[in-house]
Image (cartoon, rainbow, N blue to C red; front, side, top):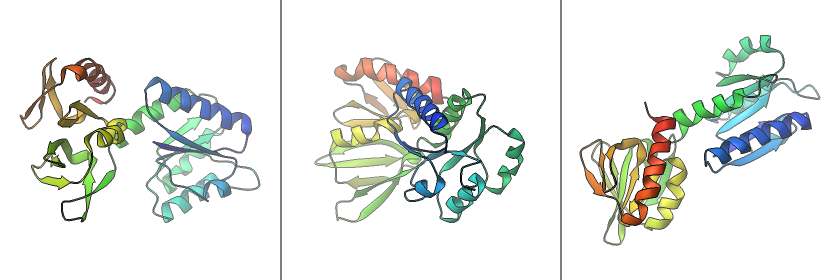
Length: 234
């Protein structure tokens, strides 16, 4: 997950970064944090998923104007505004702000992170090459599982469609682990979002399909599945 911080005061910037790092560490979430002292510096590389943006910056920079530039550029990042003047929050309709965080209550960062992850953790696409070398776009929100098929990987979607792609199982499992996917045995990676039931031997997906859990994966799977349900279950 890519997280940006734009805050001109170093004390606040370090505090925010420390709180985000603690949250990600406690929840086992890989993250890459870009902390900037100005909007100008941030806009040189604004590719983030979530941005913590101070409303009132030094040298006349306006957080709302920075947010408007991001929106105009086509950025899909969610913006959490930081302020000591909560009366400014009413201006947020201009940029569809995700959250407002009062600097006097920095514990609100945890709530913002919780909400963002619940709604956005699988809101992304991955790309792979099919058997003919064409590039396929896979929506993680709709990906039910991945299974081996000869020397290929078969991506099974929630609507029943299938995509046969190039790739390695272990590498794919590692890349997708941060988004709620887990390799339950050498032949299957499942989307925890679509696991309806699970015991020590097998999982049942929402479409009724069953898949065995490898003995070496059983303990870790139960721990991760429980953690997922506690945080993201409806």
